[in-house]
Length: 216
Image 1 (cartoon, rainbow, N blue to C red):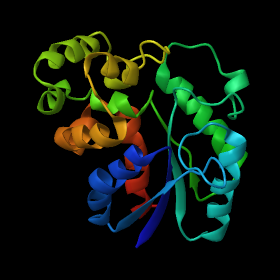
Image 2: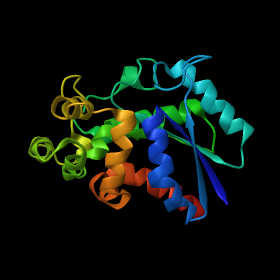
Image 3: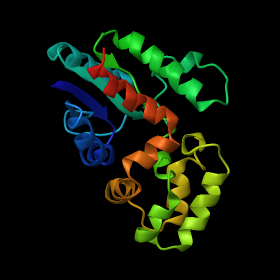
Image 4: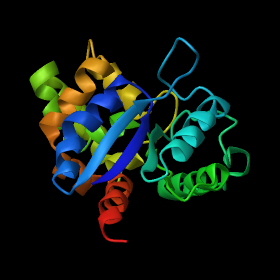
């Protein structure tokens, strides 16, 4: 069985891997193991500094060379020391930004069993794949607001990374009491993996790259 270690930013992403991705890939003979990044000797979660997460990724690539290592980090809010951030080309295409930074991270880590990946623009963007799913938790009134946000962009992954209008900020503004660790994975489960993959091409390409590990 192929093993894939996935470094994630927080508990929401960890639950997402376990609840939405694990069984799907297990059926394809691929075992996923989410790993919550450490920010200090006592704290976990968040990519606050690339210098802090690089040794963790590097160590896992070396200690388990028969497995693959990948990441599930948000493109939005990456730290300034992230590889390629100082030379990022000026483009409005979020997929080009993600690809450029992923390529630079891949070169910086430098291990053949490493698959760099960023979420465009952040985890909450995936939830815009079906705004209707929010109604079960926050009432029907929020659906029209979220749907209007979604309709303003070509895809959920295009919803912008401005500090005031990033997906998470939009959701919190209209969904009173939204708590990412609690609601994030629950809404994603209600949406379903297939719907998210259909709406989010960059996310889908990442999953395809993992699925294709069975077809070298």
